[in-house]
Amino acid sequence: MKSLVGGLLVVGTLTAVVPATGMATEELKFAGSTTVMEVLEPIEDVFKSQGMHIQIQGNGSSAGVSSMRMGMAQVAMISRDPTPDESKDFHIYTAAKDIVVLIVNSANNMKNITSNEVRAIYSGEQKTWPNGGTVRVISKEAGRGTKVVFDEVFGLIGKIRSDAAIVGANGQTVTSVANDRNAIAYVSYATAHQAVVDGEPIRILALDGVEPTPKLVLNGSYKLGRSLNLLYKPTFQAQMERVIKVLQSPAAIQGMQHAGVVPTTGLSTAQR
Picture 1 (cartoon, rainbow, N blue to C red):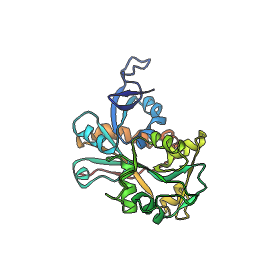
Picture 2: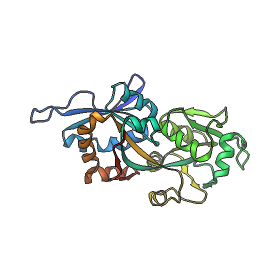
Picture 3: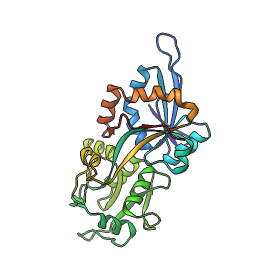
Picture 4: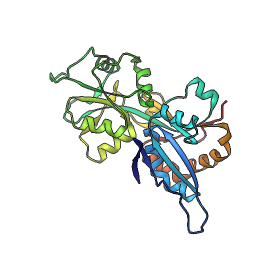
């Protein structure tokens, strides 16, 4: 079940689950990246089968870390690398590898985009498509993990054109592109792939002639890959071990693969 609570997208039931045994289910609160939220949502039942009910707030990577710091969530979900301070203060578990992709409306004939074209379009140097249409640039709001990765890879930190439309969640990004034949945006591959399957009029672009596939991300050929990380306080280590056990189970791995990400079992770190 999805609902809006205080402007945040919440996935899952907000009441405690009581199985037939009469024993209350352990309730865990996750907050942060909507990309990670979309990976965890399909495997919610896997957690329930192991006596854990996950409550998820999709409010952006940095907001998720703030929620965890303030005790409003036990686990922060981030779709970027942790900052030095985050690495020092919290333990980190890398749940999966994801792909960031460029998308355009399906009416756009473009199938490949170069890194130089991305920089030119997003900095404002290029303002029209080859067919003469005015490019509508869509970017992410500050604090979103997808934006951090995109800006760093293309050297666009502080350089995004001032007239870019700013959106938040992945679904909003897809809708914006689907409704504008001149739009371009960047989004999680899992979201874009599902949108294509659902019949949304968008196209996923190759980057520098390389298709965005899990294999090509893992071998480094496609450069817009990123880690999907879970951050938690050292005092939450015992409970987190149970979460990690669920994430490494065959059912959870299958669910994450179906969501379009590459599970990274074994990439667990405990850093202070």
